[in-house]
Image (cartoon, rainbow, N blue to C red; front, side, top):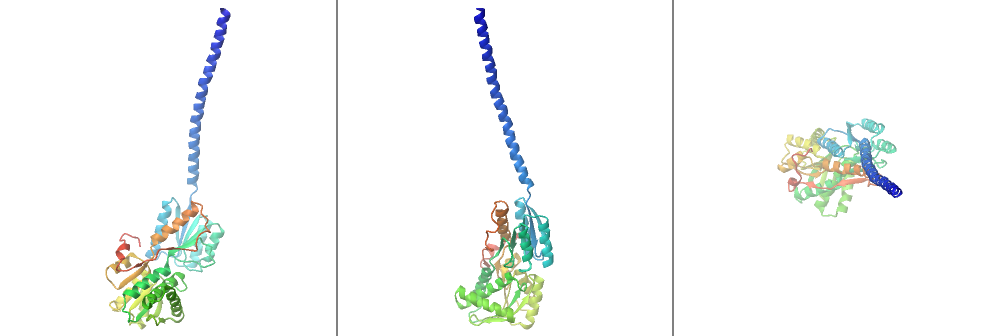
Length: 379
């Protein structure tokens, strides 16, 4: 009996120890599981912290802030970038190529991740862009194009040729009698500027196409020839379209420049019936000169771009200001920042973009101005 009892006690002890071991193992597994979950969370938090620490810095190199368009463009770029959580710095070149280069150097030496640039001069900006490219910093140009040798990602701007053409088509079809000679003067932005050349050539193309009924291709060829005559000789005429440009003035893209250029042109050209310009600001300045000369009832005004809300108001109110092309800085900014996000966040190849990225072309006139006018717009 004693021997049997001892055996039973020994077996019970073994089972008890085994039971303790079983009960401890799940406890240990549970403890390991509890420890593992916080570790995973901690790892995720560390990853998020690392991402937060990897701050994206972008620079905005503006050629000028003298004008509502440029101010709005810089503001919209800043707003869209900050919505992505990026740090943004804006530097203004004050229409100075050397200062523009210095601003680009600042972004390069401080290791910015990407630069948005509104170039002052088409060729003058090439060296600065290529210097950034060599430093591994992508450059997205906006509003104005850069030279062919520039290694930028793309240039985002409105379709200057087609915007101008749409304005010319509308003016040619709606503002003059078919037999009437269109005698005009042009207010241009800056000598040698590609954007300005595209805009004025577009308007010329549209007028010729509307007045002659030729094909678009034929109108472009005629417009290029007329634009070349204008630049080389100071005046030009297309006989088939009964359309002449009696002079060109340079308004440096702003209202004061447009006013001064128009005043000079009107001294020798008081019999004009059409004044057009490469942006709204210059044409609105020229409109003051037209008013002061007592020619408001005689002269139709139009701009190849930009779609400034003050110009829309003039169009809405039935003034001689009849048409403008849409170059919306908010749309340009949105497209440019979208491309930047593809590169900086999604890992897109910065060399894989087309040289030019254009926004849709539209002619705003009395028939459709209400569809585009926004009194709350920055521009």
